Length: 269
Image (cartoon, rainbow, N blue to C red):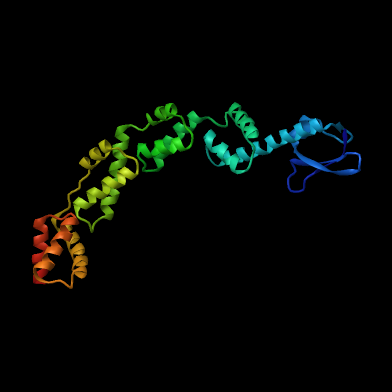
């Protein structure tokens, strides 16, 4: 048996206490505990404690420390159970303690994967331009079950998806003044796919977006691309130069008619 000889408050953390004990060779520092653990085990000067009790006290204190880590982590935003488990694992908290902490957080309603899933979907809908496939992937990465994902994703209607996809496409169109409309459409499709929209939603959105440029806008785009091509093929001349220009501009999405018009204009200048 060992005897507690002194209990002092830590200078940097007033909620933790240093326990000093005499194991038969004089007073020495033994361990530190959280204030709740101190009260729970009625720790005080003169109390005799056996080795098994010391191990239990330290185990419960480890739970308290891990619990505080988790609560501070949750204070920033909602977390899924998996996120908290991974965070505590990174902090080198042992598995049995993580299980105890998760159980306590669940009983206190600090974690709830169902509420988390619904909140996550609503947040992505309101603050981001992600499609459903990307949101589903992120929910799976956070450990949300298929059943909960299905329930939460019901919040993201097809109408909302199309509306969001239209906004993404319109933003891209405004930035793509130097590309042909065929290339702009391809870029919009690729962007929406990367953001997690289905082909059905992409098709519906692009059908509603005005993808047609005015003739002078398309002419301005081909002039920009044409000047780049002219610099590239400046060493060529005659038929070979003309063919390379036509092939390049056609790959850039411009019509044969517009290419002919541009090349005719270019020859005169």
